[in-house]
Image (cartoon, rainbow, N blue to C red; front, side, top):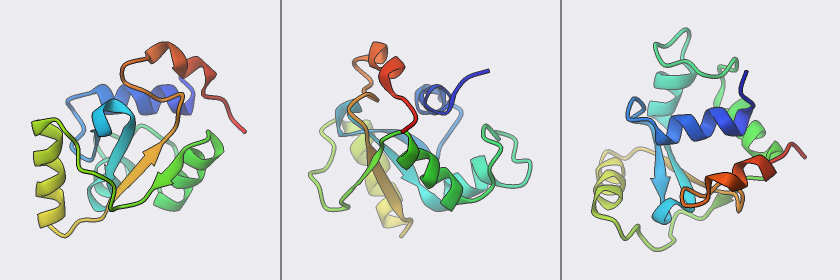
Amino acid sequence: SLCFPQKLWKMVESEEFQSIWWSKGGKCIAINKELFQAEVLGNGGPLRVFAMQSMKSFIRQLNTYGFTKMPQDFKRSASLPEFLAEEAAASAHSQILYYYNPSFDREHPHLLKTCKRR
């Protein structure tokens, strides 16, 4: 079975999930909090990946694996699809959470093995 960072990587890379995507050119993950709760953490949701059901538990896991929350006001993504997704989410008044981990980088999947539990 896959560990938390590996599951997270598969989710971010997958087309199935609308609530989580790469941001900042693949250096950061963006999470639409409300949609993520319904799509991934919801009671037996069709795309349930993690055993946890609360956002608090999910964020605790991110922190355990060295992810840090990024401020909301950093520079917008350069790529058009990312920018449009962020704009759509922002216009829907959804809360978008941004998390960064130096070992979680779209361009360097080999670094994932260095993403360890603290």
